[in-house]
Image 1 (cartoon, one colour):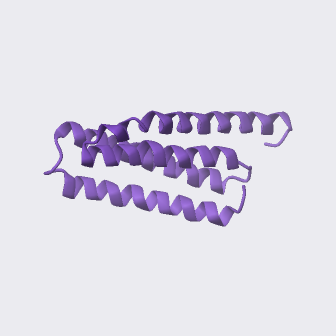
Image 2 (tube, rainbow, N blue to C red):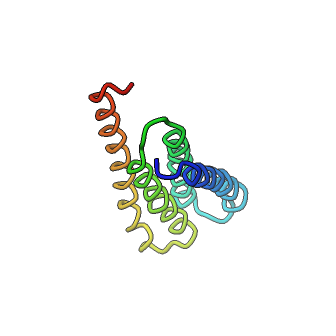
Length: 125
């Protein structure tokens, strides 16, 4: 993986932001946002936190999952952050970005599958 320490740092930042933004949403936005917008915000948090953990796991793997990590990181930013901004601002233009983040996350998962299959074929277990 291209510079593991950088990816550890990125994973840590993404995990920290997921927890911090989740706490912010639960404590500060609960009384401000409508129930629908709060659910949208919480969806962003759920995907953010899960994929921050995936980034960390990929980084700690002995295999090279650089492409997967790039797509997962892009997916977190495009998917989760567009939901955060949309939920808080109500500007629907940000919700248009969300599907691109979802596709990035899906591509990241496909890259994990492909790289894992490649490792199995080469006898690397």
